[in-house]
Image 1 (cartoon, rainbow, N blue to C red):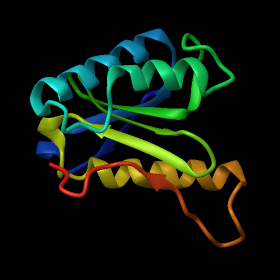
Image 2 (cartoon, rainbow, N blue to C red; image 1 turned 30 degrees about the horizontal axis):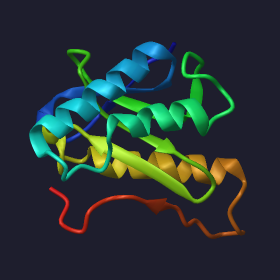
Image 3 (spheres, rainbow, N blue to C red; image 1 turned 135 degrees about the vertical axis):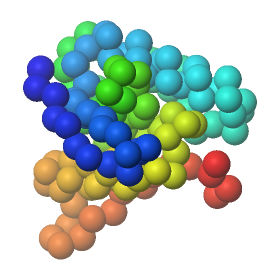
Length: 139
């Protein structure tokens, strides 16, 4: 697996991002969802069941196989600080660790979803539209 390092506004440090590679990444995603629930309670976009559902039923690959439609972001210390997935040709989702929200990672995640959507070839010429879930009063 090749890790790509990208500079970001996150506390003047570095983070890296990589495509979903298998069960270790699934565990990292579940850990991030659990931490978000611990911190935000039900005011959260994801439930751990969403991760199991998406990885287990919405893809041709099994959860232990790599997937180009899921990307994870991690801090230098290896902590998973976010993930994004393109669910289908019309929908995607992102989750960012509570300590890293509103520091610039969300924009990169949305850019990645847009790029994956374009690469899928399922949008109209010159038009990109992807539904992203969230709350109106997102924290």
